[in-house]
Length: 242
Image (cartoon, rainbow, N blue to C red; front, side, top):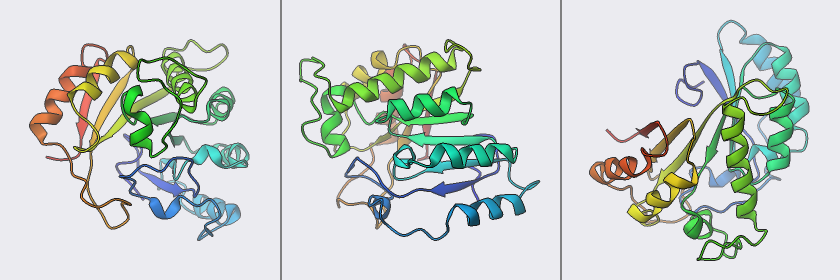
């Protein structure tokens, strides 16, 4: 149960294993392997949700990367049929799957990671050679998929997708002192220009983080980073920390 993962709702969080990224600051590194056995199957999850009607106000799917799960749309359909709003966390690397669940009305809120500026994305996602030239030249890379998903959410939030109701969403960056600096956010701002909402999330270390020695920027640095994004996004907030 969570009061934090789905803004404004008492929700439960469902963790799905499997991820195509290897972020050095990942909190859920034990979920990277999609073959990791689950603690419950779909039927058990649905029974749990049925028993919590009237208590829970939403269901948040996270991971890992939930859009890697091939049966996710069918599961979301069943949960939506129960009357639950659904929030989806995603890294944006699967735009076709994201387009499908949005178009089918299977998600009510999407939180998409913006790992870093395009130039530092590969380093921050733990995937050398994502294919974005330092000069900003697109090369048909994984980062192009993320760029597409980002633009899709901005359009969906404005109600610009035919036949689809306006979608609530957020972009967010987990800020790590060793990976982010002022130049990162000076580039992120114009990259997500016109977005509805953006959070700088304060990194906190824990035992499951793959790399030791990572720290969060200071609150003064975070406030300065937020100010760099505000000319481009009306609602910019710091999540965590103080």
